[in-house]
Image (cartoon, rainbow, N blue to C red; front, side, top):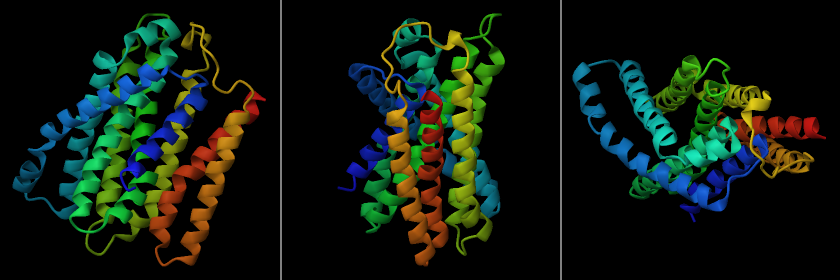
Length: 294
């Protein structure tokens, strides 16, 4: 059951991405993207092994050590996701659909990465009897966070290939650096929140960080799709009328409000508010998207 908590939020985020870009890749392409994401996740694990000994040799304070570690991890994980998008994702989709295909392509790679990473976290948590807490927290934060990073990467990649003067190298650089910054900020706040004493700024800043990253990603995806050059191929719209976006947006909003109610009634206010942030911002975004289409 706990391992299903890795797949279900990934599928929900995949559906969010499909509704947001208003087209759906075929099933074979989706499966391939998940496999690519899992392969690059294994590569990232190997590359990250020297990080902990390296940080320990620097003799930094707790926050300094976390800062160095999160930047290195973000560079490796988003860098290898970027490599997976550029070299391993299906380039035929980009040719047939247009630059906008980069958004679901990057999202699929990121979600494949997130699913495998989450399974490894749950295996580790099983040894300490904390599977439920880890499964719930990561289902609402880490997995959506990876998806948002992937969507931001795909949005910049889409913008890069719409330039009339050829490929926009600044957008290509943004496709790497912006997800790295988002990933590092998420990890830094999450790791700081796990320090002894639980710094108050980390606990109460985490929901606002998730809200900010969700809003930024939604704006980037909307910007990338504004130009007619974003999609030159014929695809079947996944939500032409906007009804699917509004329905799913309402579901996300109901879930977010239920979590906020629990946060008010619980002694774990900051933690539950953090996991409510993502469904709230995605719900608002999908609602507005659906209204625009209607």
